[in-house]
Image (cartoon, rainbow, N blue to C red):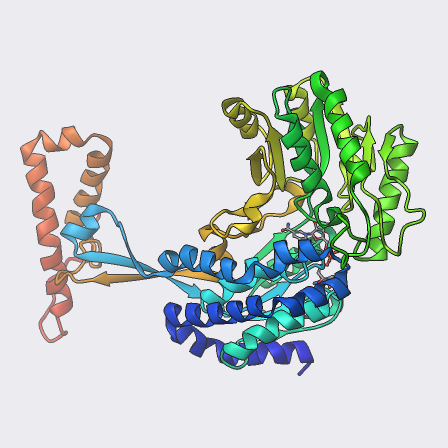
Length: 514
Ligand code: NAD
């Protein structure tokens, strides 16, 4: 057996007992592991810094601080959803025929989690915690760029959870491909190109998959926005994690009326933000994670400049350390430039000046991506009306992508950002399948069971009329009585038929043509 298959096999063997201990016990153990992660945060901060070069404050605020809070949030979301519950079946089935139905959510088995490098720890919270709480075993495949962070996360779970419930499969795309072959459900977070391959293979295997892919988020700055707060917010969400965030603002549409003032504020801020190693608390923007991503950033900026964009700040890494790229502000950008059309995933913001908000909404929607967008305005009603027309998974008014840290809010996208839903009760679909239980307490056979006869035909025909023209049946007592009498006769007919053990001669007519 190959190594990945063996990991999945061990996880599959451990899963039934994990499911069997029930939600409360699982929640207690996952919470204990998350608390241990939080207590051990210095170690993961060191690993994140070593493996990704990320700023210490960013690593602390958006990753190391998160596990316990995330688990607590997910317990609140999952507990009521995973409870067995009674379904409101139609009244006639319930009252006349003695039926009731219940729904339970059954874990899929072994869930595979394939992750990118941009949040080497945080990227596991959304899929792994709910998968475990739902009663699945999990095999995690961290990015080959950040394997030790993945190992640290899994080790903390392994110390507390029963043996083999959580496993880690280290390696590159080949290991991810192999994992896709063996698990019962998969959560993939990463690029569009890989997500397409993964989704295709899961489709062939008929296993549920959630693909959460790239983004190229737009922000729209309206004329009435609080420009200072907006400049701070847009800058943060453009440069946070050096722009290596699927929910980073990559294009900002600014209405002409305030464009000069707003762009001047951005320019001044971008120019004063300090670039340097992630370990240094006196810098703001840390280097990028890897050379391949840096090359994409440089190519996008060069393309924009060639097509007429104006570099207001940054644009060159001359004099900077390895993998460092400066905060870069490009003005006079337009669609047709790679920096506007594609995911840049670096500390670069493209300013697109627009006549008005209507043009901004139209252009914001002209994208192959649809993860987040934000609208910056003092007028919430107007912002809400604009938000309704934007084609993305989450729109924020006067903020951006903050919901990613809230287990109760769905994190999802449209178009090339993928169809996956992370977080919220809606995400449980990938971790559990519905299982329905019907309980019949009636002593009578159902009237539509064999044998067929004229009574059943009449019941069917009268039901059509009852559904289409209820008064026509109810107001004609003769018809109503006939319907009810046929309904009462049927169970007796059926009982008589099946009570016949073959020892009495049958007088049943063979044909019952209506
Ligand atoms: P990537 O697609 O190159 O790799 C992601 C993971 O897939 C890695 O673990 C990799 O080893 C694995 N992989 C590669 N080929 C595979 C295959 N054929 N089958 C199975 N697994 C395979 O992406 P990346 O460069 O690591 O991450 C950056 C991308 O992730 C960006 O596009 C970013 O927007 C996206 N992202 C999206 C979200 C979201 O929630 N939507 C969150 C974080 C990152």
